[in-house]
Length: 544
Image 1 (cartoon, one colour):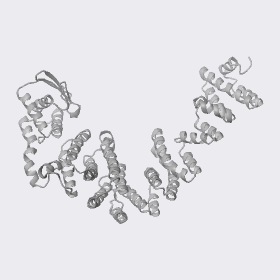
Image 2: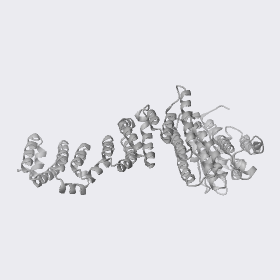
Image 3: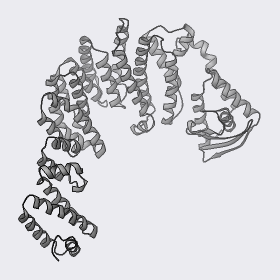
Image 4: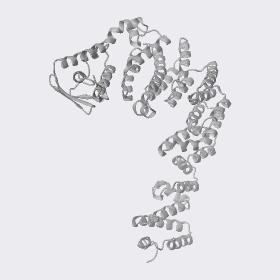
């Protein structure tokens, strides 16, 4: 049969149906049987294909149902019946349209084949976790068996399908996740470890699959980056739960094997770099605490770096080297590696390590990292770009730096950090200066940023007018001049409003002579701005 855009889309949709419905699941088998019956009874009417993308039909069931299939994305398909998800009417419509490109009977036979192979599956030693539980009762803890069951289940659901759309990934991964969790050990402590091993294996498998499918960074971000992020959040929660338990000695062998598998996160693919490093760091902080393990890991990283090809990115391995050296307390070796990075790469990791060492109250070590961070932050912000992204990063960075400054009474260092990160640190710096009563510098900061006088918080203006009114003079001069430069009637009115406030302050400071000299100079400089002079006369700033 000749391939056409429509036939290709129908074939793609058929693969999505196979991925969604499984012959070994009783409910799915019943659904396909009911849909097949509706189709064979000729109850699917008015089938139309629009733009090789959308199929519509009417299915004459107990009551007529109106079906819409979206060929590129099954989950967007719908039916007017009350059933949730993919219903028998959608299955029947699928068969009606599939009959245009292939044999429905062959499709059903092929779909049912995996169920027939399940008996043979156990003899191959390749059962999924769910199958193993059924065959053997509760699966006894066995690290290699766990990993094998995860990998087989992942490959069966995600890695052997002929789909191309990245938007299919979350749906398939969700099915895979539910099946694995259904087969978890009953004992709480083993269940938690089982899920942590699953996260590491699944994260690595999905990262590799993403590269194999040639999904771009942008594709991953739009379609399924949230799957990776959810795995990281779950890993963090599991780490906390496992951390508060006294671990049985039987865990030791599992954790050592997990340590070896965690190393693969650094080199398994070139994408998802930040997320891979995040998971690696978490595992080494929470689980792999033996000094001998960490020393061996440093050697392993060095050896792997020497083996890298020119096209391989050394950054994940180098960041891992910094991390393990810091965990060992070898700051000299860690900082030597830090110096080899460009600012745009290493700065976010420095924030993490500053925060981590602050939690340990290793203040001397934190101070050295903060100094290095301040040397590199400007270069990083220039590369980052985007005002809101910079503000968000600076906020997190200042939150990490503040405990050290408070503990060591290094207000000067905090102020240097605030100055280095302007204008993105404006709110934090403005608040600090005001709270410390440094009103002169507060006023200079407002002038630097260029905020309008009447945009500032009224309660602060009232307090400063009472305590240090001269601080407000510069801001009012600047704001009034900005309005005059607009050269329109409404801005002149605003300028006059600011000038009247200026006059009040000059009188309060007993500097009337300065006010009169300023106004004389201003009027002379703006003598061609007739409308501005008219507004000054109307408000009685000058005599008619």
